[in-house]
Image 1 (tube, one colour):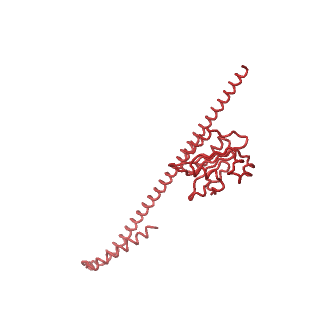
Image 2: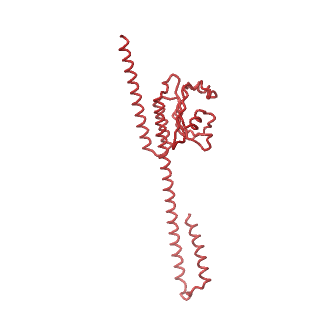
Image 3: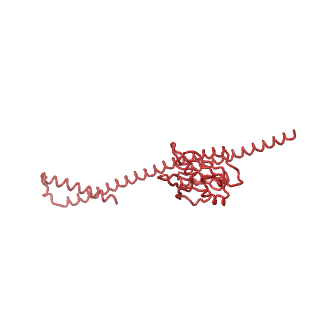
Length: 256
């Protein structure tokens, strides 16, 4: 009987802890959505996501990688522990857990990084960092992995739970959407720039044509009117040739 109040108190404390975690996750989601809505530059968005995830879980490492062509490398584009890293090429042979997540499109969870057979090459570095678990969540778009979120916890820290992994998967989905929106924005910017450059080139051509015609008319009216006569076929052909040469010159001048 004496244990019942103690058990109830422990259950209440555990419940309060779970609620606090849920609150922290919701706040993280809100912060990430705000970051996404305030910027359409993918590098800034990804760095903000890595920072918020690292702070939420108190991680040793929180990084975002994007796929490279060929499938042998990825690019480290955002890092919680070193925000200055923005575009570092990483050989997937050094990170089998990342390669596995990218190839399978499934979340990879390594409960004890220092004892995992695939990570023996990095055992010394992991031990020095006092690393514990590794979680790699793929970032997918239209069913294919275009990148991943890499998370590493400390020894002695709170272990990753199923809820934590599901939460990270939600972050990965938000990241994929943010990347898609940023890509669309940059494509629209490029299209607008191309349209603007085309309009400027057409305007330059128009000004060159007007200037040419003004000079031609001035030169023509300065000459005697007695030179006017009906054009022969040969003269008409020569005039067509000159018009073609003139248009080519105009196009070259309009290029600036």
